[in-house]
Every structure is written in C-alpha cells, then in structure tokens.
Amino acid sequence: MATVFPTASCTIHLDSPDPIFEWFLPSSTIFLSRGAREQLGLGDRAALSIHEYSSHIPQENLARLASMTAEMLRDSNVSLQEIIHPFDALLVHAHLLVTEREKTGQARRIVGHLAISKQRAYKPSLVKNRDISLQGFWKVETATDSVRLDSNCAGLLGFADEASRKISIREGLALIHPEDVEKVTKRYQLLFEHGQWGNSLEEVLRIRLENGEYARFCVYATVMMRNSDSSVGEIFGYLHSADILTPAEDNDVGNLLYAINATGDGLWDWDAKTNEVYYSPRYLSMLGYTASEFPATLDGWIKKIHPDDVGKIVPPQLAIASSPKNGDSFECTYRMQRADGSYAWILGRGYVTRRDENGQATRIVGLHTDISATQGDRAKLEDQIRNDPLTGLRSRAFFNMEVDRIEREEIRPVSVVTCDLDGLKLINDYLGHNSGDTLLQNFATLLRTVCRSTDCIGRMGGDEFSILLPSCPNWKAKELVLDIERAMQEFNRQVDVIPLFASLGVASAETMDVPMTRLIISADRSMLKRKHQQREKSHEAIRAYIERSKQILVSLEDCRY
Image 1 (cartoon, rainbow, N blue to C red):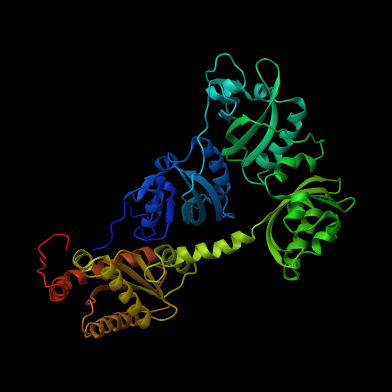
Image 2: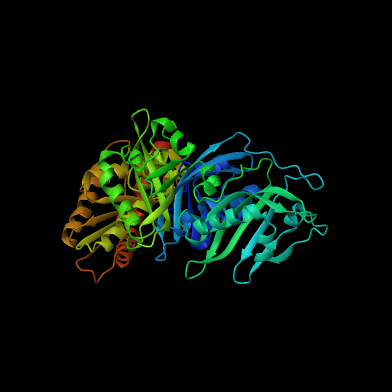
C-alpha cells in the first residue's frame, strides 16, 4: 500500500532522513520529513499548522520573520531565500524555494532544506518591572486612519495607563522627532509606496514620551496588505529601545538611506548631472575595494562588470535614465569583479528619484546585494528538491513541474504510466524497512534500464511511481509496460532476491482535448484494476520468500496487506 500523507497536497517524501520541509500556504500547513522531525524534536508529527510551528519561535522574532519572507510570498521574481531563526533551544538555518504560485503571483507552495544547530539559539528576555528591553507591537490601518498600540507600546512610551490604545496616523507622526520625520517619510515613499525594495523597513527614530522627553527606539515595519491600486492598506511592526542612535544625516536622498546601508546591502547614489556616484563603504567592502581603488564614477562601475554581462545590464539602465517611458526602476542579476580578480554574483536594484523638465534622470539610487553564496545554495537546494534521496529518481515536486511544462507547451502525443509496488507493507513488517528500501531501489534501477533518457521517472511517495512519456503514442507506451513486466520476470529468476512485483497502468492523449490531470487519473484507474487482478498471486510469491528466508509463518489475512 502507498504511504498515507496527512493531506494529498504534500509533495515531499515524509520518510526522508534529510531535514526537508514543505509549506503549503492554502491550508497554512508545514510538512516535515522524518529527518527534520527528529532534529527539531517533534516526534512523529509530520504536519503542523503554521501557528503550531510558530509557537516554537520566540515572540520577539515573529514580526521580523514575517517582514523577511513578505517579498518572496508576494513577488514572483523572488523565489529563493535564506532565513535563520530560533526554534525552542535550537538555531535553524532554512533555505526556501517557491515551487508553485497562484495566478495572482502569490506563493502557493514552498519547499526547502533545514540546517539545524543544537547550540542554544537565544536567551529569553528578562523583564523586571518595566525593563527597557520590552518590545511593543503596533499596527497601522490606512482605511481607518488609525495606529493601534499594544500595552507594551504604551508602557515604553511612558503612559501611566499601560493599556492598549488607538491614535490617528497624524498623532503617531507627531510623536516622532521633527528631524526624523522627513527621513522616515522619504524612506516610506521609497520602500512602501513605490515598493522597489521589498515591503519592510528598519529604522532608529527618536520618539516623544508622555513626559515630553525623547527616547531612541528601533522601529521595525512590514506591509501586511496592499490595496487594489498597490497602495498600502496595513502595516504591522514593533519597536524596542535603542542603545545607540545612528549619526544624524542631512536631507539628501542618498544619505537619508543610511539605515538601508547598515543592513548589509551596498548603497549607491548616482548624480547623473555630474556623473558622480557615491558608493557606500559596505558597497566597496563586499567587493574588497577601498575608495581609492574604485573611482566614484559610472565608468568605475561599468569596468568591473563581467564582459559577458555588460550588454544585458548597462544599456537597459541607461534607457531608464534617458526617459520615463522606459520605467523608473530596475532589478537585475550579474557578475562583478572583486579586488582579488574573482567574480561575485550581484543582485542590483535601482530607482529614479528625480528627473529634469525633459524627463532625463538626474538622480538614481539603489542597492547591491552579494548573492554569490545563494547562487550555489540554490543549485544544491534544487537538486535536493528535484530528486528522490532514496532511489535517485525524480521527486514528486519535479514530476508535477514537468507535467505543468508539457501542458503549457502543448506537447502531444503524451503518455503516462503509473506503477504501484506490490507487497511493500508486507516486506517492511516482516523483513524490516532496510529490505523495503532495497526493494524500492531495485525497482528504480529496473525502470531506469528500460525507459528512455527523455522520460521522466518519478517516485511519487511510498510505493508509488509514475513515468511521464512526452511525444509517446499509446502503442509505444504499451510496449514500454510490456518491457517493464518482462524485466521484472527476468529479475525474479534470480536466487535469494526479494521478488519484485508492480501493478502498471497506462493512459495516452493524442490532442490537447485531454488534459494531463485526466490522463493521470485514467492511468491510476488502469493501474488499480491491474493491482486487483494480480494481488493474490504477487502476495503469495512474497509470502513464500519471507517464510523460506525467515523460517516463519506469514498470514495474509491481515487487512493491512
């Protein structure tokens, strides 16, 4: 019998020893492989709601995690992300890859790999009386022109009555020091209204307390909802006391992005009138340069771009600078030369902040992010997701992607063969799971020797396999089924090997009138019919092998078999 998953929507192998997971957003469910459950200390629970999973993460980390993943969930251009977060007493390094999105672009399914450290990840905050380390949560609703502050916020701001309260957005802005208001307003426009650099903001602001004095707070915010016109609907965030205030800056757009520069990304600010470019210290250090080694001009940047990437990177950006007809923003990935001669993969983002009366850009600001490690991790993660770790065949997730591709490219004829190993439960119970794994691996090897290199052979889970045959008519698919059955007969002639029996079903489509979903259902029905016909014969042969090798009696009366 096939392994039963908690829900049919799960595509990963829950019995895998590797620490992998799947997040299925429509049901807010996280599925965890056996390896992930063991390392996280979750016992046999293969499926958790997102609320249950989050209960293992300290409250003070949740808002930050939400802001970090917001862009990936909404933006189809962002499909891979790394996040690190505490989980009980552990530290989890998660690699996430979006494998399926809704028509709106919203992420539907995310799979990934976990690297788990057993060192203590954090120390819980100790709050005595009104300790300054307390964090307060707040929420902005533009539709009601309101800011809601929880009781912790009220306490941090010095209100005698530390109950939650509601104030207007204007009242909320009035609490910010006048010198910081313009800064946060411009940051808000760049990050939230234009949405060029995600949906989150982190800032150090001076905020007026109830007694009239100003205190410094770290403020974190993320857009939780946008309206149909992309304007901000809701913002959620939190704040806590800041021990160090960032240096005061002037009102220039580039300098006002100081806090962005502090996050680890490299900031650049191009004055197109003078052709001078400000490259932040972080921008230079990530490539190993000093200011004297990297000219503060546009040509200084162009000369560092990999020769193969110049043509696809520079002209589009100059076109955007020349006219608003070509847009006001860009995002691109390319290689830049480091000081040591090697190349780094860079994610570049930029936005026109000012144009003259002719539409020519006079100021463009942007960020550079070194994604070299991510490029390598992506290949590793995709390999783990695309292949079944036990058999080396394609995974269910990859098989489904191939089905979508064939449907999208309208490839016909196409055939599908579905396979179900007979007696796997019987072998696992009497001979152990190692013998069951050997059976699965033997069948995978057999399929690889019979099928074409262009065929997609996938292990769908447990004892279920499927073969996708593009450009294959029905008569040829039936020949393949006969070849597989003959190969199993030949295999079973060997001495002292676990007998191999599988029920096979086949279905084909010559035109686009028959969708892939219907084709797979037809093949499954054919396979189940065949399984019912040969079940008794195959189980008797497997029972004889077990009794002969183990010198025990095996009963087939158990309904599990």
